[in-house]
Amino acid sequence: MALYLISYDINEKDDFEYGPLTTLLKEIGAVRILYSEWAIVEKVAQAGAIFRTIAPKVQNKDRLLVQELTKDAAWDKLLISDAEFNKMLAHARG
Image (cartoon, helix red, strand yellow):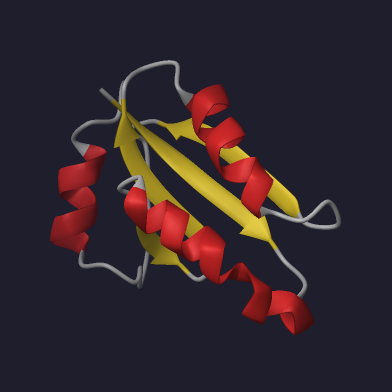
């Protein structure tokens, strides 16, 4: 398994249009860790597949990044507890 970061920039004035994006992220098992960052545990080599699933819910003017995270991580004040993030991080590779 691997841990992926899903990060996006959306125009604040259009925030109301992103309910379907939030719904989809929750449906696929992603967990919000910061306001515009989510994490998901998936099989190895799935960044492209995750991106293709999410991209239709993001408008062309916005930005989207999906990348695998490694165990080498440091953080402060995530929206989830340190214990919850450590459980997810246990799935990260090297």
